[in-house]
Amino acid sequence: MIGLKNTQFSNPHGLPHQTAKSTANDLAKLCCRCMKNTLFRKIVSCREYKVVVKNGKGNRLVEWKNTNKLLRR
Image (cartoon, rainbow, N blue to C red; front, side):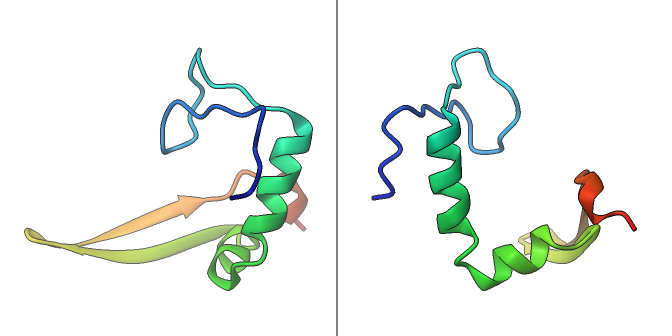
């Protein structure tokens, strides 16, 4: 495991929740682990990322917009 001893996530999507908690040290460990993943690095380095999601009802286009101001030039 990653060793996030002072972290409790309350949902899978990362939106704020009153019972969620973490420390800067735990978040740094999580970020280091995530940055080892090629697809993750690609997605978080883009200002926007689009993907087609296929399900039983057909396909739909999903678009994420990155709010990281450091990516704006």
